[in-house]
Amino acid sequence: MLGQCVPFAIVLAVLGIELSPAHDLVTGPVLTTTPALAALTMGPMGTLSTAVLAAGVNAASATYNQSWGTLTQLIIGNFLGLFVVSVASVILSNAMRTRRQGELDQVRRIAVAAQEVVLRPVPERLGPVRAASLCLAAGTGALVGGDLYEAVQTPYGVRLIVGDVRGKGLTAMRAVAVTLGAFRVSVHYEDELTEVMYCCEAALQREAAVPGTYSQEVLTEGFTTALVAQVPEEQVVLVVNRGHPPPLVLHRGSVQALMPASPLPPLGLEDLVDGLTAKAESYPFVRGDRLLLYTDGVIEARNRDKDFFPLPETMEGIRASTTPREFLEELHQALIRHTGGRLTDDVAMILVDRLDEDTADSGYMSSTARTARSTRPMSSAER
Image 1 (cartoon, rainbow, N blue to C red):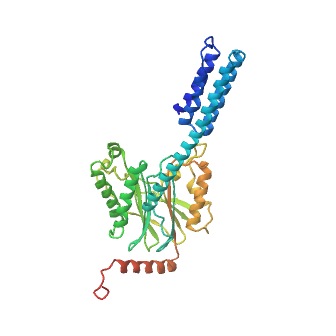
Image 2: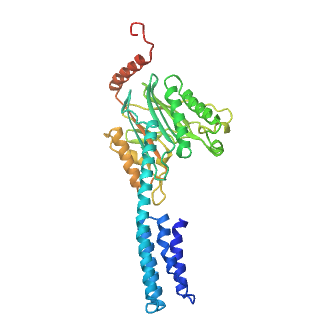
Image 3: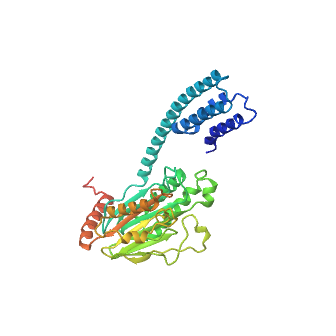
């Protein structure tokens, strides 16, 4: 920002000299440099604006000091030099801008591809539920963020995770990959949902113990809010919440927040609590209900009046006949309208619908059978 002010400061300084008793100083060559300086920090339009302003000051000072008759050739020479430098500066600025945009687009494509490998969309059908996911990047210049989510069908039911790593960039993305990796493995082998959370916590601790993996600031102040949920065949949902915004259940048009009975600290801050014990809490989740897991970028989104996004009210206003994907898309559009398209934090959401028991059983049992066949040891005849 300071660099963009330099050309205009030079133009104003020249104008001050020309209107003062020191107007005998030759300032034309100084004005000629301003478009070149503007090309280094501004785009073509900014460079052109600087050139027009410099030309205006040159003409105004010559008129004010009545120099057209005696110094006409010098003034014309100044205009000619300013014109040549301005054309070259605009061309250079445009070329630099095109090159930077091309490099930024390439980096963004690589970052998005890497993030999509880690944060894959959830399947539309998972045993007793239909599901959909949505991830929105904030326009803050960070190409990769710290939001995470996943939904996996297991022998214990459908297990989900949503979380938010403090910070952005590659450091946050590394923590996201570690957390999701631990979750995707542990959900298939751990009977208790709390053990799944402990596996994610232990994975982050092992990663932090590797020298040079994270800066001292991240090790001191970094943490990850996370929530894991389990949708079994029974009409309930089990939740373990480590400092994350509570999930919301839409039941018969009314939204209820699943608040934890005993709040727990985020992952990475467990040393601040003595005798930390966590247990899965059970909440009703019956046929026709909708469960929304989300990150704080949703509820902390503000409009021009600094009002928070009314997530429960918005959920209640969406038609019940929408599919999970359509439901999240309507939430997305409402969020964009509320913020005027200016998200200040990343957003991640997972929505699951509890299906009819008969429909859910057929899909769940067939998928479980496929999972069992793919994981059991092969017999000698099969080999």
